[in-house]
Length: 575
Picture 1 (cartoon, rainbow, N blue to C red):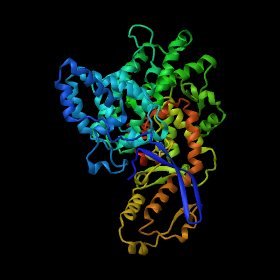
Picture 2: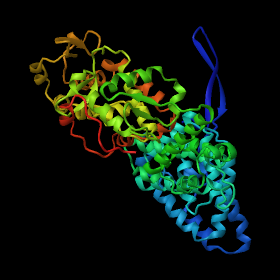
Picture 3: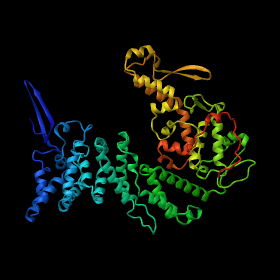
Picture 4: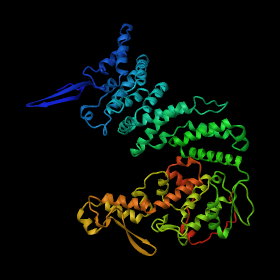
């Protein structure tokens, strides 16, 4: 058999009469495991650890340098057992991680040997990979973190830079390898970068002097950390999200309290504001390093800065005046006429005939009342699901075509101003705002009855039962008192649901409810939401976090609220 250390390239083919000639050019493979590959062996390691003879040390150093400055030698040293090795890289890492860990424990006890291993790794990480998209070549990225468990931050910085500079296909291959790691080893890699980012973020931080955020020192490692986070999400959360929180971030969050964020501070300390904005920007780009409490502080701080910037330019601030008996009409009029810049300021509401109250006044009472008015069926704004008491966008066009834009505007204003607007939307709304596709589980929340039927269809295992169901790719909707049939796909009325396309049917049904049937309604809502909340830091929140913030922790009795067409203004005022 031909040696695989060469690649054949056909350069010319000559054919004629009774013979054919093929001319080939042999090229050396850029990444090849040679027959004489230097690898780590038990006998060799034993000599490294036991031999203290100075005359042998030069030979030991040469061996260590030969092996650990070569990705091929490192990979060849820790290959998995034969039956695992020949599985595809999508299903296995190809590296015996337990053997790597055992080797680390041995050399960690010999600082002289360990120092030489790290020195060789430093050389390796400085060199470009010959095959940066090959899974086999990338396996040493799994080995190196295990050998750096003593928190060698210089080498970790080089490792992060090497991963960061991989081409996109190389990063994807490495992410696949990470996804196949055992949970304990994956968690170790995450913990290592978590500690590194925490330390590196504060290289220029001085407790009793000017505050400075070390963006340059941690961006590459944050990018790699983000890759690990996304692998964790795609793998169904191998480890809990809290493993990605960086505790040192709390120092920056608490440090924000040092600055009195007011108008005078904005004018006198522009450099400090610049540092704060830089930190807020980085946090908003990598929100997974923050817990919910820290995200809220970051969001509120940015909203406060936007408010101060608005006040520095516009005076007096804008206030919405409403009449209790015409609350909806007055609100829609104000929102339609308001300039977009106005939503940067703290929202202020004045109820006509009530005392003029500073600092936002009746803002929470306003949101409580308007939520109840929008939610009653008589308003004909939403589609109500009796089996869950949730609401969703209506298929039918409202008499006010911009109604969902205005409602989205209210949601954004509430988030920008730390207020609760508890309209009973399902989690699917907040998933869509985060560009996450809703699933059957979301439909089960919106309508348990429909969700249960679709689950039964998915669980059915006999094709004959589908014939008796007589289902096709259509859905029947009630619109303006009439029942109409909507096709879930082209020619859907003529496509029966069978054992073999049942998942496609369920997916199409879910997509219709959450996407196709309300495409314009949701797009209007999303535009209004972003107008009402100009601080982009809201994107830090996960869908469940965003819902909890906007809905609060109060359990509303919507059956009671629906009985009241116009809730009276509360006697007790909440500031």
